Length: 87
Length: 266
Image (cartoon, rainbow over all chains, first blue to last red; front, top):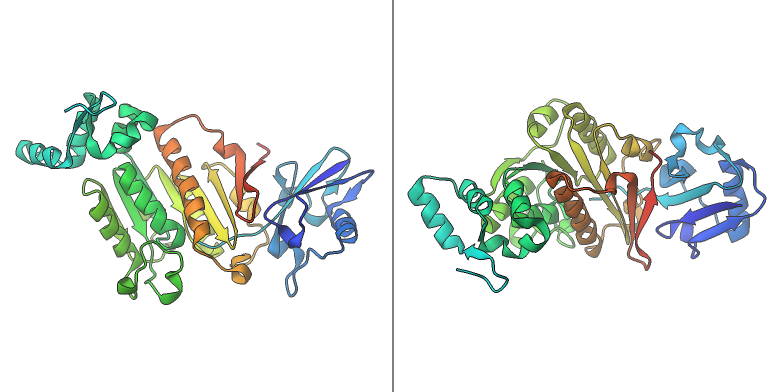
């Protein structure tokens, strides 16, 4: 099982966690699965996916793990939250 | 005189009078009093939490605040009240109408005034013992080292990624811990980035100049929650108190869940 944790109401998802059973693939494939499950799009209009949201796998940012090609498999926890930059 | 909790405490007017007659600076004299178990009344409500040693130590510390707007204005206020000894205040901007919804230092009368100067004036009004070093200038590659040198921590209270990246790079070079805060709508994030930490570089990988705040804005209730957490973590860092903060990214969601901690891989 892969645990997906949503922080700060990202993409308008009301749940805080989705458990995806029997998944093994890339982060991009997991995102597609989640979009199908929730009937939403993580990609804001006019923005690419990685410019608006931050993805971490097991507390590690995906930048150092292959970006959207990062492997995700059983036992992993994926965290998703918006990029906030205001002050 | 003794306070109801049993502390021997001295009013501000007396502290000033004795310091002046002894030819001492107020901050120096306050630290000396604390080191002898005597509490300047102004810090009395801090002592149960920070201790006399902690309060005395705070008076000898230096912190920089980069960005004196939404987050920074509140951070400056809290640091001055806490008695952090020396504050470097950096912001090249002036107050404008759109700051009135959230920036504590922005009043109608302050529109057009330099934020760094307003921050220094606020510190002086709250706590005359705190030394202020205001720079009414944007942080640049050229001035960052000179502006930040000598500080133990720096508060990242900026509002754009190019400046945040520049601050992080300069702080790393100087071995200064960055207390990062950012806001967007109902959300905020805070983390403590020690000089060797890669967390902020990672979070900002592939990101543009601004974040979700370009869409959801920056309402007034979010900065105070984020600024308070930044200051609490900053003071713990200054005092060398044990804190697991650098192992977490704190995510604030005022839509409901409140504060959540995301554990970071070390």
